Length: 221
Image (cartoon, rainbow, N blue to C red; front, side, top):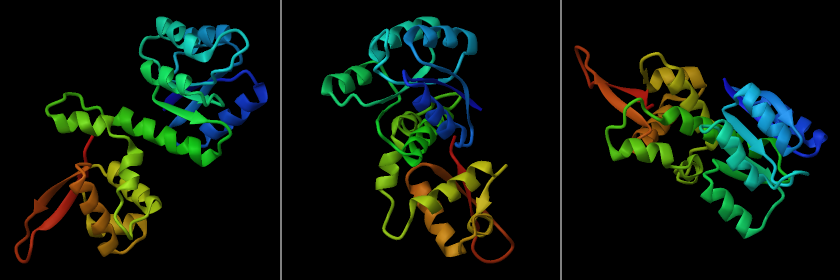
């Protein structure tokens, strides 16, 4: 589970955001804070992986708080959630290495998409980097992949195919993937081949006694 600390000056908003996060598989909120000082204290006590950070706090501007948070826990990740639309705020957040910047108001789907992207990046870092492709997979925003889906492929089904492939203990054929997801074998093959072309999946061949070899797919981690 990815542990999350929610930081927002409005306790009702913090409660709503906590509810959003708790609805996303693989994430759990371990605490909330309404001021910068509370956030620093909570970070030291709870050691979250990710902080959802509002910029407008009563005792400190959120971007100024990031340095204090990382002084306590250098490897903590920050996802900014704010109404701040100023270009300077966005540029400052980027310079400080935030994982994303989400403008208020937003809905559950908006936050879920960004949390999933964060989880994908976090899981995609290999134990050993052996090529530029390994680096590119980590840094490539998931949304770029969504925008490149060919005509006829939907993001919802792509997510289901991805989940099935990730969950497979070894590898999957198109027929096996189709059965797990509830789509046709031809459709499953299109998604799997797309992921292979994007470098997200690897293809291996299983040879039988007759006919063409079976294509097997493995999600690249």
